[in-house]
Image 1 (spheres, each protein chain N blue to C red):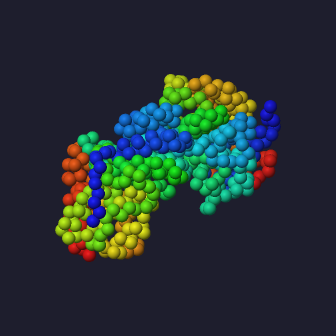
Image 2: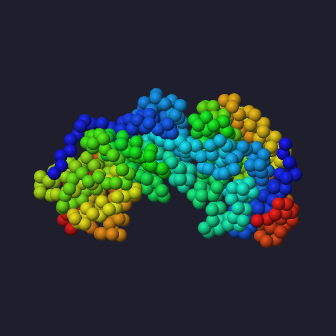
Image 3: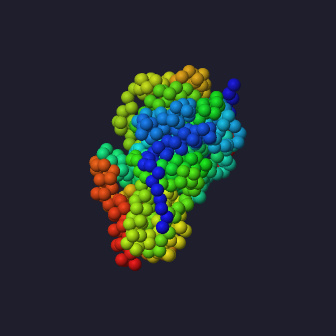
Length: 281
Length: 317
């Protein structure tokens, strides 16, 4: 049984890490990162069966792929806090000679990253490949992948969705971060996504909703439900309703903070809403 | 001069298919992915023998490349198969990010490259793929010349760790390299020794270069012919050693002169040992419908064109 107090503390600390990373380098994507803090904390600390030491092949453990690589600040924070690399390294985010590139990459050898992402729409395909490799290796562990909702405008996703359903890739759990925002504005104004649930179902996926994607308990229970549905011939999709910029009042209910860093004053304000729990890096 | 014999015309894509079949038997980690061109890529045997390791992805090349990248995570060695155009131009960003930048051990195997695809015309005749692929950091680029060499290369690249672009073609062409050859990535093969000119050729142009060398020999011109099956990494030493002797060079490829083998050779020469160079390549143009022979003649990619280029480059010495 999860210790939710500890997990909540971690979420708060991860928010601080996100804000401090993007503030220091005055660039990066805080909005989507904040919206997915609960998801990452739940996945890495409660849901996934992970090996202690990182290996690229990840045999005998669950694997996670981030398709919307721009939310790297939350990914880096959760990986560091899970012990993949020193938390002090978060201070190098987006700086020269850093392993923490603007978008995640295997190129610099950062433990925890298994593929580069940033150019959108590629992660589901990679995850399907990894899922098929698991099956060939008779490894019963699962593949998790996260993508953004705006990212579904990329056509490759729909190739991947057709493949996964048509080939019974049922060891795969895709979560769509449904925050309704993208760089140019609300997804409904930029290019409406339509009824995603109906679309995924029409493609042959099992679809679940996490209505409260920023409620840790709801996220854990949604992911556990998804896990229970694996192994039944269908790929699983979770539509996770989140709030971009969650946990910082002035970053919520807008797309303005998709890819903008807070200034000194804004950082102070944001951090005051998220007091230190585990300790800053 | 050495005599080369065509042991019977065969397509290079069959060399790929037969190499893949052999690999399937000896390496359990080899998997194959195909985008609705199993017959064209000669992957039927692999599919029949190893159905669990064959992945039909449909007409969805972007997903195929991404899946291949993912399959390497878990130790698989994926070979993707489709036409050269759909293997590169269509999926450039997927290769760039998920394969090359991610350092994944994917073998991108591309058939029907260049003009010799023939009647289907320019939509399918990619003449830019070598350039696209060689520009990607860490990508190995191979263009084989005949059936035997394509089979040997297919088998060899499975033992090399890293992304590879393997380019071959559609038509039946002369099969003249040894059946039992040991294919070494990045190692040029000297086919004729000569003193007046170096002819460096890749892919289908290698046989044409040999024909040109024979014709030139009869006219008293001694041509050194080098088969550059690996365009990247280029065998710098072999090329420099040869031009230091001959003092001029002709490069020959079924590709645009922009971005191809010829440009790589130019860079090598200008930074080390400048000598006159002539390019046998398409001249920044698209192709068109026609038979392979008609097209190679019209676009100046055959033995006769090489012979003329040799005369021209020798005059510039």
